[in-house]
Amino acid sequence: MPDTALRAEICRVGASLFHRGYVHASAGNISVRTEDGGFLITPTDACIGTLVPERLACVNADGVQTGGDRASKTLALHRRIYAADLEARCVIHTHSTHLVALTLAGVWHLDDIVPPITPYFVMKVGHVPLIPYHRPGDPAVADLVAARIAASHAAGTPLRAVMLDRLGPNVWHRSPAEASAVLEELEETARLWLLTRPAPLTEAQIDELRQQFGARW
Image 1 (cartoon, rainbow, N blue to C red):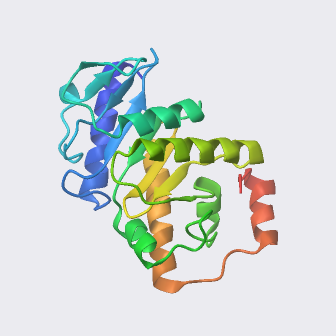
Image 2: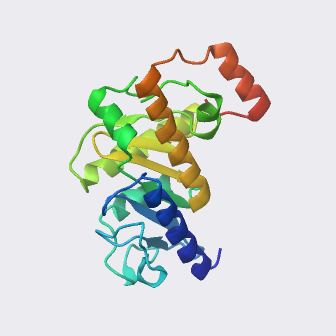
């Protein structure tokens, strides 16, 4: 997308997530990687439900801000995600209620915060590891996330999301709309798991999803 369209799409996705309760107040942020290797990212402490296209922070490939309001402090983590997964073009971070609640109540496993309970979770999201708690903006988190992405690629099961303990998910995909869809599926799966605690899909059922739909589980 050209710059103007990307700015509009960030604002559209932000408003959609806000008005449906996936984010609140000034929590959360969205970034995209631009064609010139730079980034657009929501400003620090901005409400992503009321973003203004012209005020989005513009950062060049070297990480130097060149326009807009002051960039979110999570930019360093976003840049590490982009560097670790070259297919990623958009990163979204939220403090989604059921996902944060899951970390407070206890995740399923450290390598998979929820079990594979629905086919669309397996196909659209995949494995989601828990990243141990660090204060917001701690640079150590970026190292941990980059290492998990590298390990997942080596195992042939690339990640589309990680969960920051007590803070919320970071999800990524090829566009804001696709990244938003990953976030929504992940949050809905956490809600279902907290409500019902169903048995996971069987290995045979998951293998069928691999064979029929290319699921990377």
